Image (cartoon, rainbow, N blue to C red):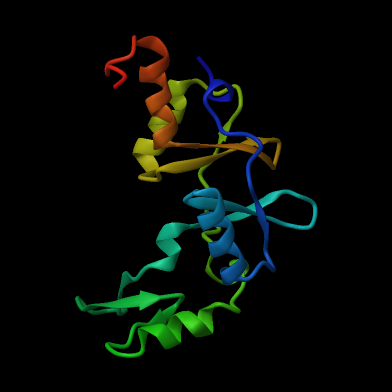
Amino acid sequence: MTVREIMKAPVITIREDCTLEEAAKLMLEHNIGSLPVVNRSGEICGIVTESDFVTQEKGIPFSFYRFPQIFGQWMPKEGVEKVYAAARSMTAAEIMSRKVVSVREDDTLEALLEKMLQSGYHRLPVLRGKTPVGIVARHDLLHLMCSRLPACRESV
């Protein structure tokens, strides 16, 4: 079995100049957890995930201390709403991960799972050349169970 058989296609992408507010609306509207970011040529240049919208701990150089940060800014104890309000006009290019782990349509499921395990990512864009054509999330792997087993619950 190949990635092509379980990927979601077409994939919803955003451009680098898309605002975070637009990205968040797309993610909510389509119930998705990530958006590949493409340049003007339609080639992948990054990815924005729902994790980018929550705080992450960042270390201070040469220190053991770690502090919460969001959208590249230190997280104040008060004023969280102000940080989100200011971030609405930020662009995808400002927060996207530039290191994108991806798979190809003809990759095997074993190769997909290995990349997911090694990277720790839950969603991988599927590329044809440098262009996103699909996406595979851990959730999509559930279909492997359902398509091979009889129904396990009764209708009421």
